[in-house]
Amino acid sequence: MKGSKSSTDQTVVLAYSGGLDTSVCVKWLAERGWRVIAFMADVGQGDNFAPLVKRAKGAGAVDVIVKDLKEEFVKDYVWPALKAHAIYEGEYLLATALSRPIIAKHLVDVAHKTGARAVGHGCTGKGNDQVRFEVTARIFDPSLRILAPVREWEFRSREDEIEYAKEHKIPVDVTKKSPYSIDQNLWGTSIEAGVMEDPWTEPPADTYRSIVPPEKAPDKAQYVTIDFERGVPVKVDGKAYASVALIQKVHAIGAVHGIGRTDMIESRVVGIKSREVYEAPAGAILFAAHAELERLVLDRKLLQVKAELANTYADLVYSGLWFTPLKRALDAFIESTQRRMTGSVRLKLFKGKVLVVGRKSPNGLYKEKLATYSAKDQFNQSHSEGFIKLYGLSYEGSGAKAR
Image (cartoon, rainbow, N blue to C red; front, top):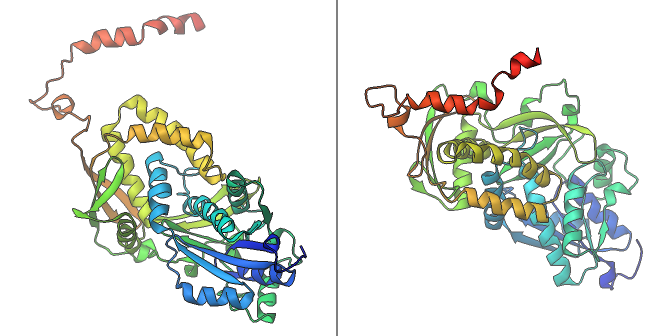
C-alpha cells in the first residue's frame, strides 16, 4: 500500500463514521502512505460533525467532506422500502442496510471529483456492510480500488483497536467496559457487540439509545393518525410535515411509548448468524399504518403477490443489491400499487405495542352495505350457493378416490 503521497493514485476516499473502526482506519492508512480523504454522510444520525471532523484530521485525514443526504435518503431509499414493506426475516426494518447504498454512491462521486483512485471502508470481514459498500462501488465504477483495512490489519479485537487509538491520541466514544458497535440514522439504530454477543443474555439497560423501556412507558395510551398520499406519509395528526421532519416527529412519539425495539438473531450475507438489537420507532408505526391502508385499498390477489415480493425486496436491500435490474423492476411494480394508496390510519400506542384502531380512504374497497349483518345489508346471499359449487367443482369426489 505504499507510494507517492502527491499522487492521486495514492489518495483514498474513506467512508468515515467517526467511530472506533474508521478513526483507526484513517491513522492506519496514513501510516502506510495513503492520503486519506474522510467522507461523512449525514443521513440523520444526529451527530455534531465538528468534533468528528477534528477527530478525522487529528488521526491523519488530509481533508474531511461532509454531505447532508437526509432528504435524499428518505425520498429515494426509506419511502421505497416502506412502500415495498421491506422487512428482513420478519423483524429488521433495514435502517443501516438502507443507508449503505446512498453512502457508497456518494463515496464514488467524491472519488471522481477529487481524482482519487481508491475508496475505502471500515467494515469487518464478517459483516454485511463490506458487501453493500463494495458491490455498490463496483456497480458505479469497477476501476476504483477498494481498501478494507479491517480485513488486513494486525488488530485481533476491538480492545486492540482501543489501545491503538489511545496510543495515537485518537479520542473515541467507546471503552473496554462498554464496547458496543452502534450505527444510527434517521430511520433507526443498530446495536451489537459487547455482552450481547451471548444470545442468551438480555440486552442491558444501557443498550437503549432513544426508546423508553415498555415497562416504563406511560400508563395512558396515545392515539396518532397518519395520512398518506400515494403510499407516502404526509401528515401526523392532521398536520403536514416534510419527509425528514415527519420521521423525526413519529420517532419522538413512538420512543416515548416504548415502540420499535427488536432483539433478533439474523442471517448475515456471509453465512454466519449474528445477534442484533434494533430501534426504529418511526418505522414500526409507519409500517403498521401503511400495511393497514394497503389491506383497505388493494385487492386480495394484489396483496398476496406484493407480500411475496416484499421478502425478495428486503433480501435485495439487506444483501447490498440496491442498484440492480431486479430492484428497479420491483420498484416499478410497487410504485404501480401505490397510485390509489391515499387515506388515513389511526393507531393506538401503548407500552411497546402498536394497534390499528381506524382506517379510511376514498379508494377503499370495504363496503359497509356488503359487509354488514344489520338491516342495511345489500349482499345477495342466494348467489353464494352457485359460487361455491363452481369454486369447488374440480375437487368434487377427489377425496373418495384418494382413499
